[in-house]
Amino acid sequence: LDTSAAEKIAGVGFGPGLATFFVSDSGLFFSSSGVLSLIVGASSPSFDLEYYHFGKKKNKPYYFGPGMLGKVKLEFGKKDFGSIETGFSQYWVHSIYTDADEFLTILSLNIKYDLSIKSQISLGYDYYLRHASLQERYFTGAKPVVRALYIYKF
Image (cartoon, rainbow, N blue to C red; front, side, top):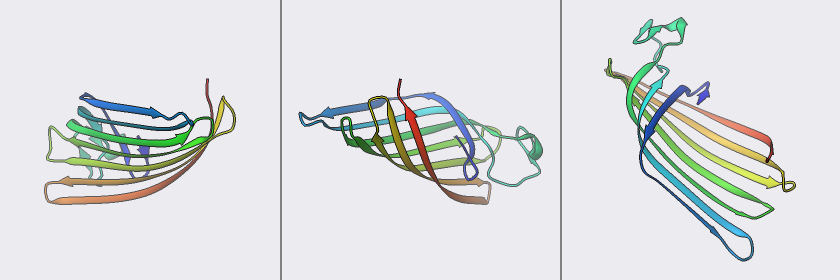
């Protein structure tokens, strides 16, 4: 993920997940999914320091270590018409060489409208909330993002 408020955070991990999907005879549908994972991740630092664990400030440094990822997504819509989707994601990375903790929370809302079987318009809103701590220092930053997309389905 890369935003001006969130900077960068990434991870790879494993954990349980659950997905459900329900379709009525009238074409209405509901889907949900959730996952909770233990990750090994990396995060750009939130603090403006001269030196970081991996490199100097000008060399795009990052923290590296264990963490967790949690995601929940809900979608309600009508087949061949469109849908409304909402999501919540939270990432956490703890640096293995410092006391730094980086958290990123993402709240999202997407409205999708099907133009045809193969194309769709999507309007989305994401709210990024970043928290960090390092020893006795704390950081909080937030940024809203609006997206408008034309999607071609294969």
